[in-house]
Image 1 (tube, rainbow, N blue to C red):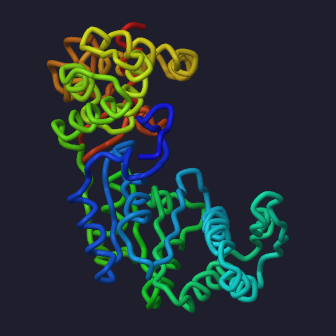
Image 2 (cartoon, rainbow, N blue to C red; image 1 turned 135 degrees about the vertical axis):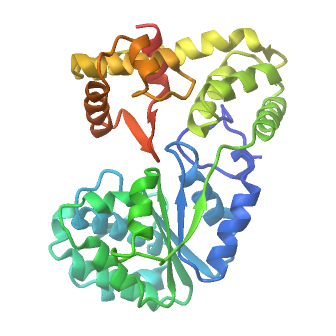
Length: 375
């Protein structure tokens, strides 16, 4: 195990030593890739889709594959997506001179600059998003180069549902047309908005219909996560109680990012030879919530009064699931009418504060819910 100061890593993949379980999911994803299938992975946000992909790319694929991963969550159009893909491909190809030279010859639509890292001597390719003048042409050039590679290429696109809101209205058809003719390039699509992904891939009227196999990512088993936490604490000469880990797991519905954040904080509370028990639960939550207090205050202030009232009602019920338009819920929080609640919920969905999972409305930020409980 490569020693790092805090083994509960947040927001990045380090190595298999700090990666919890997902053995079944790893085997399934590798099986699909090795059998030439394009895959779509669906889960709630922050549940570990990206980590699973990085884990598989780093450990479970043979040397016969070249792997690339981009996250298009912030992209607004095809140009921005192609820019991210070009950056990732050039970065990976720059490690091998022969591959880089082939890529530079193939991609004529980009004006690139080459510099060399003073410490490693490795080439670094530079270009700005302004160089992407013809995104469709650049995309064609990149895919053609990958198709000529000696290895099978796997491109993973995280938050793929964003293409449905791109400024151009033909991106789905464009990508599907290009992808279906590729022979040595496969795709892993991942996303956190199930209804949008199912619309892209399950609607017979849309280009990507029936073009992938699906994987659904669920929370890591509670007992497996407890074991993982205790093993990491033990590796550093510390101890964490099962009760604390299980209580945090329940608080955050097993969502990996929040659990890692909580255990990262718990790890700081004990010196070598010491233990962290259930009594630390409230302290951990208070610290995590307080660290984002100013962000939460600004977010709350941006809401309408009706949205604030509805969201406070959600927070009061957290972590229980609720039916916000039920008469019981409306009466309990004096919300007046179901139509008023629906209007407020629509606004909260548009702002990304709530998400829709087949009609069930859920908060997207669980720490925000905890802050609202005590606001």
